Amino acid sequence: MILLDGKATAAALREELKKDVDALKDRAGRAPGLAVILVGDDPASQVYVRNKERACADAGIRSEAFRISAQTTQQELEERIAALNAREDIDGILLQLPLPAGLDSQRCLELIDPAKDVDGFHPVNMGKLTLGLPGFRPCTPAGVMTLLERYNLSPAGKKAVVLGRSNIVGKPLALMLGASGPFANATVTVCHSRTPDLAQQCREADFLFVAIGRANFVTADMVKPGAVVVDVGINRTENGLAGDVDFGPVSKVASAITPVPGGIGPMTIAQLLVNTVASWKKRCGV
Ligand code: NAP
Image (cartoon, rainbow, N blue to C red; front, side, top):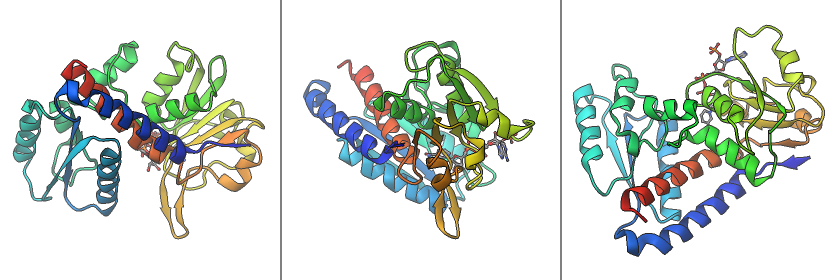
């Protein structure tokens, strides 16, 4: 069984990005810049933002966090986004979700300049993904694909099952797996809460991707022997963090599996840096 080590892979990616940034910084005239907007004081979001700031520093990216009161108005938030859209030295804008009640996150996401939408959630970038055109890819599913590629585990010609159809994980992941290309070309089934006989669908998967937000939901009897299992879930339980996959028993059946923590979480942050550096290179012409 291969443990798909997202933590080590993400660290290697950050190191590669740092070399890239160091080599191009003089020609670009400045370091890459990422703006992170955090509204309110959700503790999990605060941790995510701190981790992103730290990862940026590691890779030579200048990050600016805007910590805004939960009492902010929609208009103030929209003005903040417009100001960041206009700034030359900002290559990426990330709006940390969820927003406090009363603020319209979809409207805010649509106001971010698609050329700075390093989270890949703008309809223009989602549309480009659907059409197979270049554009920013959402960080979590792109991080999944990068991890597979780094371990040389191609889903091409295989049956892939994705549990979950959210806009940020399941849906874009299904599109990436089913796209044409050497590390894609899978035959994809997407399952959700209304899928009958979910266990049987899972048992048919050569590659099983789980993003539903239910701790230890996928058990060993739901996994085909030798399958590659990618667990995107992050659930806070009384025993600490747990994935959506019952790791111990499933790891005895799978040929490769991601741990939680240390799997897709760090890959998601690394992908955000990859997108930010790509935006910087394009905007600075280096
Ligand atoms: P979400 O928006 O809540 O979507 C969950 C999806 O799972 C929905 O499509 C839902 O089906 C489906 N689902 C829920 N219960 C199910 C069940 N019992 N059987 C089958 N399908 C079920 O969640 P999300 O934002 O995609 O996140 C999913 C998990 O990934 C969470 O644990 C989250 O914390 C984690 N996550 C991790 C990262 C990371 O960096 N590693 C990033 C993002 C999310 P319906 O559509 O029918 O409701």
